[in-house]
Image (cartoon, rainbow, N blue to C red; front, side, top):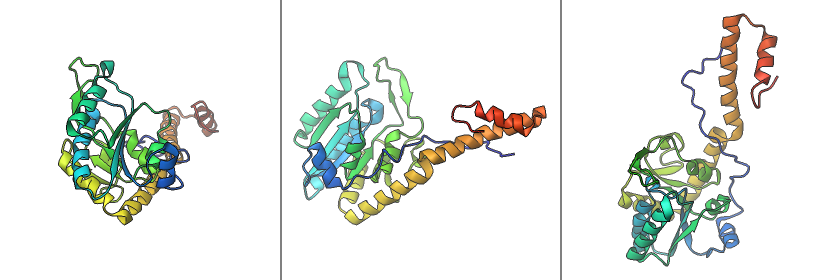
Length: 259
């Protein structure tokens, strides 16, 4: 009997859909982004918990310290009432003079091209914040965000705020650089470290892709879920003295089960 107590079946990513593009430059051209400008992106719904304001603060430091043009892209639907977080971010962009290098794309049906066109993807989330509904309720970051494994599957290195669960989805210094939450200076330094070292950038992207395929691909996810189902059915059979044939038939009753 398999013992799967404590087994974690993490979120899965379709690594056939989320995959590296032909090249970053070609991906930029398809989106109409300048191919000679490096791109740093955040993908995820807009809300205080996601930390886009921290990213914008870091973006100002990167712009000032990097020897070359850099563009910053934020893609995602605003979760706050009446688009309040978007307005707050636009005000921050204006005050920091970032209007020429930051783009808020809003909700995007297919985010794969954004990942493919970026040199670096950033997860700037907070461990806790206020509910985007505006009612003052405290909300917490639970598990790792999907953008971490989606960008990895697209072969992109990450800069990640070390919020709960994120360490399960990335390997420090191999697929991403971890920084303390709500520390824009550390975030900027990590982004600059990657942008200034194309060889490391590429190597980390390849390792990230490999990690996504082996740990978070649909096949591995299915194997883990299958083990859990089989363990439950084995235990049920042992308790009830059921035959292996009953076991197999029961397995078939589960969605995606096999006989």
